[in-house]
Length: 266
Image 1 (spheres, rainbow, N blue to C red):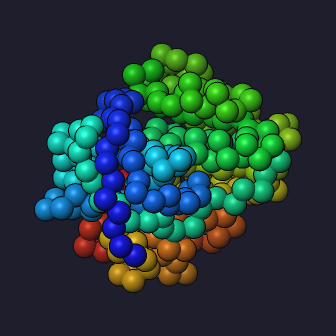
Image 2 (image 1 turned 180 degrees about the horizontal axis):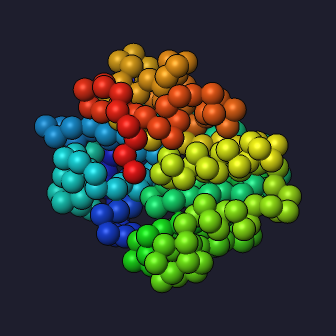
């Protein structure tokens, strides 16, 4: 799969160390919610980013500053500049919900916004629980309110909405909600609790995993999950709850840049 040269049409500061980039594509990608693209900055590096939206040849990406390449993009890539993108890659969310609860944490809210837009457009009822460290770190909340019937916000310091974590708020909202599907994206320790609770309740659940992705096509094995050998880059990044709970790695381990299996960072 080749690269597409994309012009940066707009850059928005969403939260500390998190920016949104609107890219003008020369051809539509036809991406689905939950899929991702690889962003290549020549001479700097390449990194995966979940698609936060695509419409009319404009690709919306939310990039958190986490390393050299994303730091370069934050500091040096401005409106009018260019990046190279390949994708869309991976398997996205199944869009078969009638009443869905979306649970996002931090910049994990970004791919869920794209999902909320698609589900709402298909006639589904969409509710969202969004969790952040504080009001300063809250992002995309108003965008969710434009497409979701209910949006509840949790902040760990109580500076906006419910005081607590996204999981704490999810535990209040989920019982009795009548949801037939739960979708989640954010820190894996958060998702593990959400997935386990939904599976126990007999509600379909899907989660989007984050891993160090290098090739993006399932060849290098840098993102393999034990013991099934599933590749996050090509078999995921979205997996269903039953599959996730059968994995030793889910909520416990990931692989560092050398491919070594190490405890998941908190």
